[in-house]
Length: 335
Image (cartoon, rainbow, N blue to C red):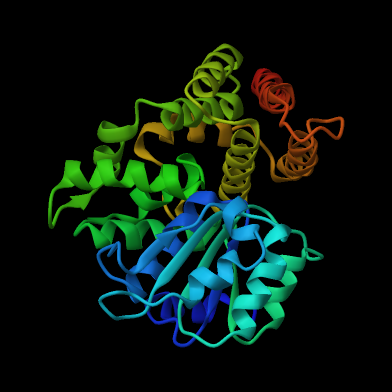
């Protein structure tokens, strides 16, 4: 069965009689996190008598996965089998498991699987299985996850701090959780994080440099934008991340140009306010609309490397940002 987002949280806590869960998608960190939650729901504490990790190649051998799933725990209780890097080679073995009696939960972690994937189709259509898409979260969904992860650690954060984290840390779940764990240690149990705390704890990496590049570009400071972008990418920012952040920044600039800065929620990060206000003085809404259209096209090109290659092209992101910076400088000179 396909598991939609509304049912996911409850399922992760109690998968019921489900025999198999397939977690697939681009965010391997999110898939691992959800697989860990399912394991904990069935066999708390990573009990070696109730949890087995089966290599993919071993699981693909005829009868191997079904045989392991049929085995009973020596101390009683429901068992869990974990298989990572799952592919369509496991479709037939999984079908054997689903057609046999038993209660062992088989958890398979896969990368991106097309809709025609045999393994995905089996998990989506069989009532004893669950297919869980693990795609990178965006916008309000990502902000909600950041707040939830911090709450797990006994920490809260101001909305503006959460929004900054969502827009600057990237959307890979594993990386995001590691950074939030650092923030939680910084705040301490019961602590509340403000913008200044976020900046002090993790603002010295690619996120801060990227933020500086965006503000400098729309304010017309070409040299600073170029230097900050180079630094951000050397710290690990990728081209698609740069373009998405630039798109969000220009969208907020457009909203402020139409409705004023008071319309922005969350408000502009304190460190960025001077450059943001400078940009508002010479960017008109109709020009920003044209910029937004060009950024959407640049993001499409960056995802394909501009030539159909799967590796994003840093030149596309750099060209987009510096084009905006030069356009902004020209607009500022014209007054």
